[in-house]
Length: 161
Ligand SMILES: Nc1ncnc2c1ncn2[C@@H]1O[C@H](COP(=O)(O)OP(=O)(O)O)[C@@H](O)[C@H]1O
Ligand SMILES: [Mg+2]
View 1: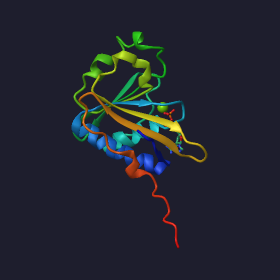
View 2: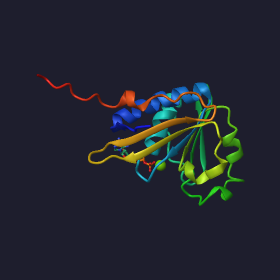
View 3: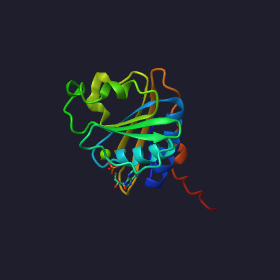
């Protein structure tokens, strides 16, 4: 699928919709992409969309932060500090992957085959020039449809003629 090109305001708006739907549908969301791509920014917007009012900070020293959202607990995890899936047992992973609510996981590629098969995958990449990001979003397995990021791309200017 062709990526949507979003500026930060668009990414935040889409993130709110993503979080609202993820909480309602209890979806595990894998956030993929390099350092600085916007995974934490997106997770913050998604947590807000899920009804989290507390400030959402990067879970760098603990694997996961838990928040109270509108429909129950919301998890935000970051796997940056693990090498691979062999380090997951004992870090609270079991609770995360079976959580009946919204879960947002940065550096999810590090969990490899331990990722739940029914999930959303969001890939963020730096777009050429400017502060935009290429955003690819897809639903895997039996996960419900994922909100379309293209709806939040800035509309191209209509040429005046
Ligand atoms: N279009 C955009 N989408 C997301 N973040 C953006 C965008 N443009 C600029 N930024 C900035 O890029 C940075 C992304 O940082 P962060 O979310 O911590 O990345 P990551 O968690 O992927 O390492 C933030 O400082 C944010 O303000
Ligand atoms: Mg981050």
